[in-house]
Length: 477
Image (tube, rainbow, N blue to C red; front, side, top):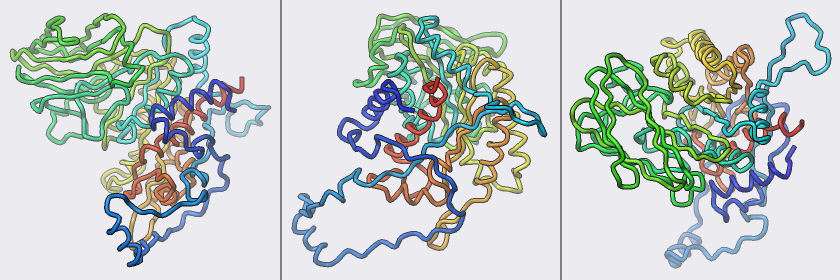
């Protein structure tokens, strides 16, 4: 399954996320086989922290900052034990009708259009392949998605950092290739903000930043060690055109380039493209103070043939929030990106929703509407659903399953193929219910003790597994 190109891409992606030293851990070099059957869904007791012996505690005090002088043997070295995580293939679409007898492998690969785009890129028949990855906090942190960006750009060419919000959404939000900074005066709005206008004028990502003050500013610059940001040649600005909209000045690399007006009789998507010489550029936007400026995002790309992966994550969000976005604004922004693959990664936040306020049947209906909207507005793109991973409930000193989480996974497993999308089982990849405990106790730790979020190494582990699952059909050609 691992071609030389795939192995090289994995190695480069691990270094980009972990650095050379941490990436050299041999435990990251391979993924376990498909895990079948999954362990039973039963409560798991949490380990009781061992009391530290008095002699060892005193020794640590005497050593001060030098730390323990304990000598570890080979069995204690990081990477000596296999890390958790299993290869899980993508569930594709079977075209047969109920009652029909399947003849041979009749399953339709839901990533076929994506594979075609990659092969055309390799053959020089196109210059760009674009991937859009929607999700919540795990996506917004850009660790697993950052791994996938690095992996695909290593294999097929670097098309640049992609779409970026014009403002940092939360302290968890980040991007592997760029740094975003903004003044405090901007008004952040998306479907999860209780004080927002809830008008849905959010564009591609589902979030906007607005200001009428000339004291406000926002900056985006490439990270110093980012190869993707070092060769940017185009910056596309996306904003809301609206009645009484104000003007804003655009600065690039410390020089004022232009002033753009957003006043327009009707709500519409505004865009402007800036062409630059290859380099690591800094974008800055400043409102003129003559009306509201509402920013949606900026796209940083290179003029080189390659892959672009847009990280489209918002902390705490849910798939149903797509349905609150202004359809026309979103459609116009989506058309400009012309995606070859759209990925959805939702379900964890929905697992803690009030079952009375949002019953599972309502979740099913809304998720089906989201998939239908994606398929109708991007019919030529491939589609993939990544299910939630393990998210146990901590109660009475033990981990207990969340029935709603498991029901959501099964709904996604059913609806994704029904709408022509692939389905990847994140719970099976982790090892089934309770596996989050094993991930948090791994060496190095792969998950946090909130039993919800991955650490950087855990995100790398997930990125490896998703990349292998996505490319299985491509590399088996």
